[in-house]
Length: 126
Image (tube, rainbow, N blue to C red):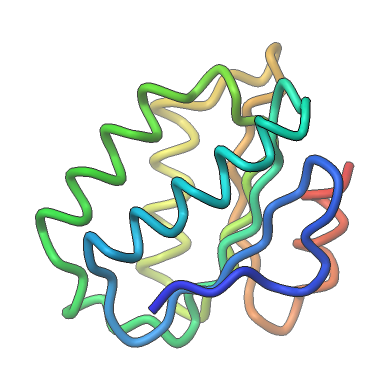
């Protein structure tokens, strides 16, 4: 289930994905992201809270569509905060940042434990 979080303002989009992740959730994210671009923001900072997401309930077709959309729109992304509660999530985010991050262009993805959500928002807003 996808939900835009309070605190999403300006070029910052905060969202929570909980329980499972489906193609409908991907569509909701696309709408929210594209509305930020339509507001006139060249690049969007994103915070995604996934501490209540069951990793076993991520639909493969949603994961593929999400990944393709992210790759297509990389130049419109900037700081990405992933908020979770698992060592696996942390490792995956670090790997993703090493493979796709572009520090010189400020495309940086960081993992934050759910207890540090304030720091995650701070990074997304910086």
